[in-house]
Image 1 (tube, rainbow, N blue to C red):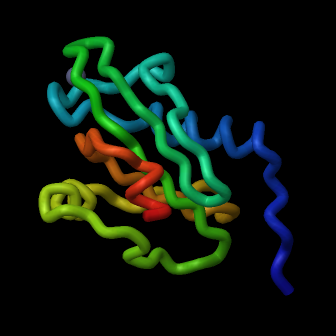
Image 2: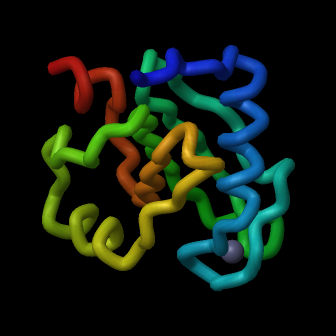
Length: 117
Ligand SMILES: [Zn+2]
């Protein structure tokens, strides 16, 4: 018997920021600060954050796929460059409730188009 997703939006947001605050800048390799992130887009199971490193001002995006007891799928079309950076990242599990897969990329296009187009 599978439990319903118990997290409300605030819980998700808290979890997301907790996870991304463990990430390191792609450009300079130093740890991000929580304040470096802002939420850019949000769908049901896909959140997109933008980050600007407070050390080097490097900008990137973090795409978070949330799955409840689900195996990650390819899901979206990544460019070879993006796929490469994805491969370097471990999947991060949070509390056995959500499997969140964080994709860092320097993709600077239209995410709306990427996921819905
Ligand atoms: Zn940096």
